[in-house]
Image (cartoon, rainbow, N blue to C red; front, side, top):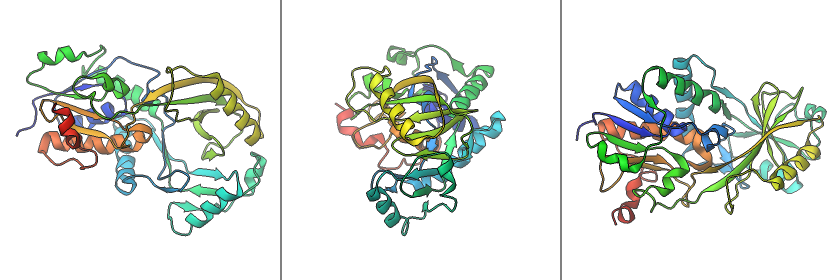
Length: 343
């Protein structure tokens, strides 16, 4: 099997961006189809790469391989575009209860990503909290909005982007090309992949103006306060598995405002409130690779809430698979669903 003559990429979120970037590095001909959706999950993500997660404070899946690779990938693309897209921005976790503090203190003894910050008292000038502070180190913050905007401009300048919707009916016109769908939640309706176990969830966030809050950390206590730009901060997020639409809700805004008032000692101003549907799935593992029957049709999707770390890694795996036939990680390879996709 030789490398495809041309790759058609559907979608320019994080997955489509990095797939096109790695194909560009490998001098493989490609073309991206995308209509800009300012409310897509990639466009409004917080941009945080966090190596530990959940109430049990455990390492995220494949983080030892995924995070170092992602960091280098962001540095490569920011160098090409001459932008600043990634910075280390550790998480300070202000424990809300004695039980949460105890759980962190127990895990910090055995988890190298966790530590007790030395300057935990000074945060009393900024926040209300009754228990100790824990730090996750390193964490990374990606300026996803800037990255997507600049890569889009690069594609347009080089005639590599068609700003139109791509219909599956158009596949018949691309018999000599390989088509990779990186179109987020829209792929759940794709007849070639709609049998995959998608389980979309809705996230919401606020953009809030806060003056004089140091922007070299991410702060957590009931919500996440993430540096956005200048004096703006990203506040969120929810993981709602039962939702009626993709619109912002008043209940979320009220909940976040109550948490901010309880936590923050500074005044704030809400600038924007948005919501988006994430392309998550029941297994919480990506969908990567070529269709088991239609060999010129593939997918790079299902990154869920870990898109900033997973997208670069699996975009590179798919690139290596397309060019050199290297295997895809079994837990991500879409071939694990070959039975249901072959029906």
